[in-house]
Image: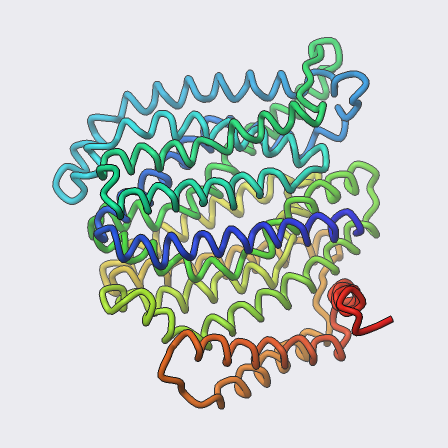
Length: 494
């Protein structure tokens, strides 16, 4: 757990730095500078490129996370694993381009009326797909060699810095909107080059001979993992982006822009999970390799406690300040208020189920998670078709909450009944009680004329009460150790 703790802390710091940058860009600059349709365009370009990129990986990222422990040997250049990964991803990109050009005319006809801007900039999908494909491949490889930090640094921080600078240039009329879109694409592509350079500097950008190492049984297993990995990764990214694509198709770019902006606030709850899960998945894969279930259960329990506490803290903090969110965004985005609530709840469910889905995906029963994800996608499509016509953009958020709850319940139940592992104990009721007490206490704070001051005072009271009570509850030994270390560093404790 030491490696997870160290890298998750560093990763969380980077993630929150990225959140600050993302907040400035998404919540302050975008609504002030761009129209709702222009915001929708930028979000749609990313969503569609992500769908293609996950397919073009041909499921090999799943192979990296599951099978790399068998290749791990730096003296032997990891038996050519990186070379194989890059070749497979390039082949997948070529296939993705064939598909893209085959359906390009259909995409144009579908969007020419409601989303004319998307049609104008549709060719930018090509570089976005290319660089996203190879970032995913290189980031998975870097995580496999126990470096989950650099990908977060480049994606969460540097990418957002360049996007923010691009928007500022547009604000001061130093560039046109067309040039802004170009710089936006460059900003999203840049992390791929940075992570490739970092891997090279670390001495891990090595090419060996995989042909003499991979046996027939290993190749058969890797093909099976990759086939199911295609369905898994494509389903996973479809889950994150299908609402945006369907909203654009049913309502247009303006509503998509409102949804994308308010959706961002709901996703803040997931930030701590990014760094924890990135490294936890690798350790879980090693645990399954040696069939060390005790080790896996330890990771499951500790990760779940950390993420549940962090998720509840962030969700209640967001609900506490939801009025102030719209003081920032403005009345034009008020239609997305309940989007924040429902997406926040959906992501809180995700935090409370922790790494259960990754325990399945790295076990011999990895195929099960693919079927769960396909069910998840089916639920999302059906519920979006039902609720978007009824409730507009809020309907997409309701669909996400229902579908995500069912999916995470299935994953948790499978791990419990198949492997006999489940992290929940009576202490979780104490965690919920702490959250309610801290929330109600902060709500007693009198209103201030300036919403920024109100956010600071309410949040300070809420976080202070929550953290103090959590510490004395001893809900998580890792959280308590982190608090003790922080107090010692601040010279409050010997």
